[in-house]
Length: 238
Ligand code: SAM
Image 1 (cartoon, rainbow, N blue to C red):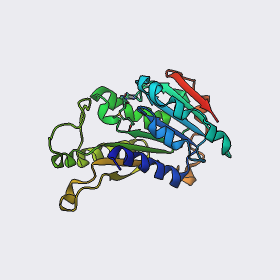
Image 2 (cartoon, rainbow, N blue to C red; image 1 turned 90 degrees about the vertical axis):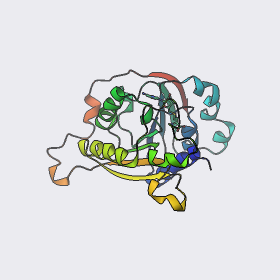
Image 3 (cartoon, rainbow, N blue to C red; image 1 turned 120 degrees about the vertical axis):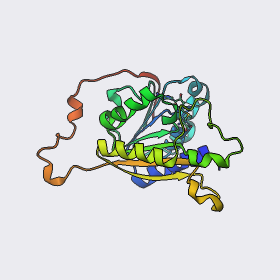
């Protein structure tokens, strides 16, 4: 399958493995990934956020809405889908409390100012159980016929060392673990270049059981002031 589909299948595998109830996709584009995830019965809440939502409304709102098939085979659990127009570097309290947040081919579209805000918003404030971030691996680029950026809107393309350095620092700062993998394996004669798309899987560290008295009570976020900055552009419930 083409690379973009391999990225979606990668996320589907993560969802099958970890069974998150609440999943948000930042930079969801035309929401193809969300359309695929609505068939996972563990998922009860799906949220997409993107700066631009026009493409989506033309393309995929039909596929996100309940269809005849959805009613013929009812789900055991309810599912709600909400799409917001907003930026992944702005805080909105409706993104608190998620099990999984995915950022598929998003970070390379952030300028240096937004990239600097991104970790504090996603890891520090949204603080989900798990984060999956994918981005192009520039070590792979020499294997392409023309060696420039893969997309003119990319602000940067990191090699494996750069991505892993950034991701490890973010993980350390916000108490997550991080593992690296990818999709789009290199040919056998160029193993050293790594995957075409590099992926970091971040998992929030559980507080040390001995320090529970010092830890913030669970749900302490709920008492924080509501901040609604994003604009709702689509909702569906099943
Ligand atoms: N994740 C989708 C996929 O894999 O098919 C789309 C990836 S596309 C390369 C990057 C997306 O990020 C675009 O839809 C763009 O509008 C969105 N985007 C760029 N900057 C953003 C920001 N600050 N907040 C939210 N979305 C953003």
